[in-house]
Image (cartoon, rainbow, N blue to C red; front, side, top):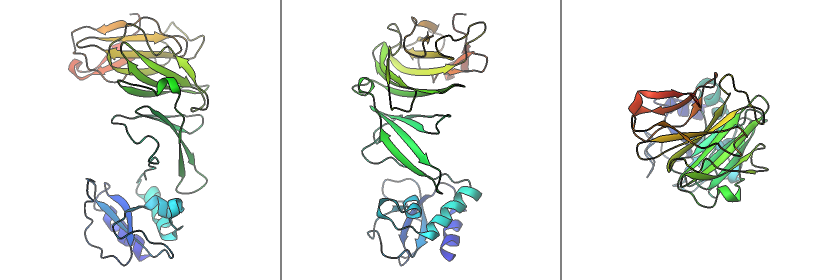
Length: 292
């Protein structure tokens, strides 16, 4: 399989290559940088009959290996994909179709540990990605499953997946002043319920959703995890807790005022229920126990 060996030599020169297809008759030199693409190309040779892209077209290797988008089912491409996955740890991309999730400067994603599906928040779009593992490499199907109230207007989008021992809950949030327009789903976007979105007295920028076990001695009664909403003002930041699985929130309380500067990262909850809000101006992270 000379074609596969030629391609693998390019992989050995670095793992940041973009895997594309060019006709076998095309001259093969050192991979070039396609216009607007900072990555180099990994040239994959193939003699798949009956189909050729335009002379200047780059065709995704995954399409060639699975026969998607009109590409032939190419055994050489399929063999190479499997080699890259198993022995080189190369992860192949599953790009969204042009009409779904294509416009987001800061997308969010979360994996449902129960169903294996992935939710992807891209601007006003909440997309569900389903994987078919019965084939190798797996196929990915993208679907727009946006909920109307959380896909109309936004000052800042964010998504969060909360995985518990009994299931998973995804939140889509669109910043709206001191709160957000939000909704949540327990079945990967098939059905949604509205959320209060956050406290009415939260910060006005950079909201973040997070969740995890309650800190002792508290326990969940309506939902197993505590859900947190944090946001910032110019120099202060505030967080609020939901004891209803993100449906409603208690008033926000400050986690700092002017000690760290307003900008912070995303709220995370440790196994013991300690809530962390990272802030590089405060040596990285500040542990914060709600109510303490």
